[in-house]
Amino acid sequence: MGTKLAKVTSKPPSRPTRWANRIMAGVCALSLAAGATILAVSNIGLLPPHPTTVNATLYVDPPPAAVAPVIGLDRVNPAQTVNAEQIRQGLTALGRPGAGALSYCVTDLNGQEIAATPGYVLKVPASSWKVLTAMAVLSAYGSNHRFPTTTVASSTGVVIVGGGDPYLTSYTPILNGHNRLDDLADQTVAGLQAAGRTTVTLGYDDTLFAGPGWNNHWTADLEPEVAPIAALSVDSRGSGMYSSTSLVAAREFANLLTARGITVTSIRAETAPSAATELGYVESATLGRIVHRVLQRSDNFASEILFRHVSVAAGGDGSNASARTALADYLVSRGVWTEGMTVSDGSGLSLSNRTTACALAAAIRAAFSDPLLGDVLAGLPVAGYSGTLADRFDDPSSFAARGVVRAKTGTHDHERTLTGYAQTTSGALVVFSFMFDQLGDHGGAVYWMDEAAALLARS
Image 1 (cartoon, rainbow, N blue to C red):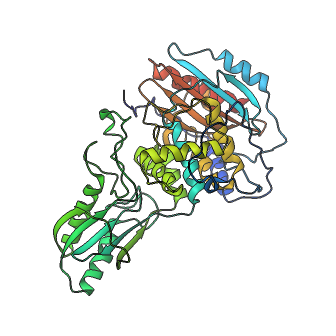
Image 2: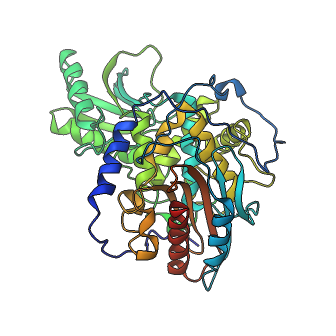
Image 3: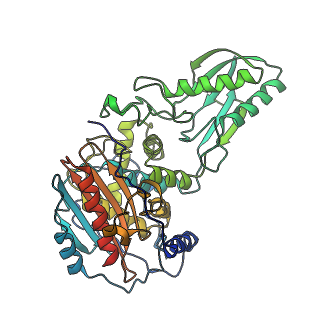
């Protein structure tokens, strides 16, 4: 079984101007950080026992601070409450699609359960899992962190050193940030020419992340969805599940050096010498912007790079195995770990990942209570407008969700998920996670989730 990116689509109707205005107002509200009520996070139904094997101080919650909810909606009135009975009856009245098993969990921002049927059953999260990876990496590094790619001099030439930039490119950067490989080549050539060198060997150092690059829980049919993970990559390119992503990047860099008059005699894996002279340096976009793109586009490769960074931040070797431990430890520290939960990767591609709807809902609640995690909330696609939700909510039964629901989608061959939050007509916020598995009809599951999200918005 693999991942299908196909989704139920149709041309959306024209967007009402009032919703567009609310979205724009919400973008402006992202900079607000005062005047809002601190929202408590409950560990509802979650079991804590899990052995911690990394430095837990890396993930200590920050001191309480006033946090404005990061949403593209109307101003939130924390005094408002929701009609829980109305929501429960409404979800029950939706019935079920003809195929598939459904689990969902709906709570308020204080962790008070509104509806959960059955909310604590372990299921495959698909790409809703990316929310957890985004939380962990933002907690470890902060929104303004950037990942460097450098070149240094060696005794025989140059070594390019990967720093885990998932969006290093040879083309026009897709994110604002100094992350063009051409810029690194220009700097490197200038340094070589200043030293009178026109012929070099090229080494590539990808030791920030230990191997293997391909997760053994990924099947071969996932090759179109993700390249082997490495600390050095260009345009997220690999050459198949058994290839070296770093070697592909080094060859691209060698071509750029050659085009600038430098002869490259060989390309090989090489550890950069200590205290070497730096020839070139470029940085990624900020981590906050990277997280936005990962969540909006459901970028598997970039999410896996961030997953490896979680390991490095926790003192690990950047391997997939170390990242699994580091993410599990982080989730325990945030109270979103459920007994039986399994961490297999950072993107949700693996069918071995397991979590519950209530654990995913708890993760969204945690993001509302922590200033470090504002980019998780801001990065979630907006119903009917952006990212993986741009072409959904176009049926009259789900119009109410457009512009007032933000959520992360998830898609596998037999699973569909949707995890996020909605603003109700009263101005209150509710958090939700819907999880389907055993599906034969994706369309029915998508229709149900869109209707359910709209129901929350109307409540």
